[in-house]
Image 1 (cartoon, rainbow, N blue to C red):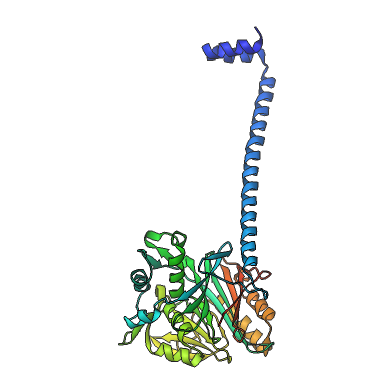
Image 2: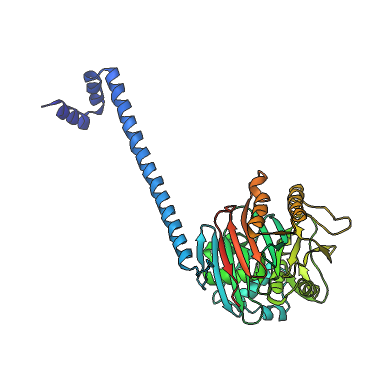
Amino acid sequence: MNFAHICFRMRKSQPTIFKKVIRGYMSFPLRRLILCGLIAALTVCVFSILTACGHNAGLIEAENKDSRLSDVQNNQDENGFITLSSEIMECESGLSAVRFDGDYAFDRFLEQGGADTDQDVFRFISQSLISESADIQMQAEGFGCSTISIQNTDGGYLFGRNFDWQNCDALITASYPKDGYASISTVNLGFIRQGAGLASSMLSDEILTIAALYAPLDGMNEKGLCVSVNMIQDNADIQQDTEKTDITTTTAIRLMLDQAATTEEAIELLKQYDLHASMNYMIHFAIADASGKSVAVEYVDNEMVVTDTPVLTNFYLANGEKQGIGTSQSHERFDILDAAVTEHASMSVAEVKDVLDRVSKDNFDEFESTEWSVIFNQSEHTATYYHREDYENAYAFKIEK
């Protein structure tokens, strides 16, 4: 009977005796050496497993990225513009795009009185436009933005926009309504929530697309009219209360994109409605048309004030006691953009991209990021997107007429 058999039999019958036998046969240094060897072997095993898991996760992410890139490339025309369908296409993680053709009942929404809260907007969507019940809500923390309007060196005008927030899922929506101008717009799906706080990823493509049409944060229509909403850090709110039809911040953007061809038309449209701030945030609009007419539309004590300006960030521009109220950083970004406009009578797309990069969030040591930058070419009706401050890779779209 060898040592192994002795150990096995004694271990089964007398564990304490087994330990004594082991100690008797092995010196302390030998026992320590074996223990260290076992620990080392276990460490190598765990490390190998974790490395394999990480390697596999990296391979999966790389494969997913390659698959998304392939989808984008397969949907580009000969000029590099991405063609869209009613199925949401993921351009890359956190950035998707979709197309909507037909009637999303915006005229009916306005005819039935509009809405003075985001919840009423989404209640209308649930009851009138989608085939399933969806308790959709809008929720957000503060966000920062920068916009610039400038003449294009190749002719016409360009409108650039940064949207600054924490990491979110952005959805680009090309819309071709039954009655209204075609447009391309962007929504932060992080603002859209289902009841009980469920993320937007729980919602179907149909619901997300419809919600995006009623919740745009910026966009351009086929006439070259561009609109962006920028937040102002202020305790004041916008709650106009007359006999006019009610609209929220995001439905005001939809209204202008659908129905206004020029900046003046957009201003006149807004005057016909009572505006109520979405998510109870003080905001102002940057509006610019294909002729280069660029303004900020602000609300002071619920009264609309229009200021000519090619640049807008996150503080009041209107003359009066509110002027300048906003974040100090937004003044820094404004000065950078304003200097660029002062120094250049015109810019190329590449130069606008560079100045948007200079005011993106990675320059200011904050937890937020610039989630998307977009440059709208107002004569060519194209939109070029850059995601999360990656200004080397662009996604280009063109509004079809």
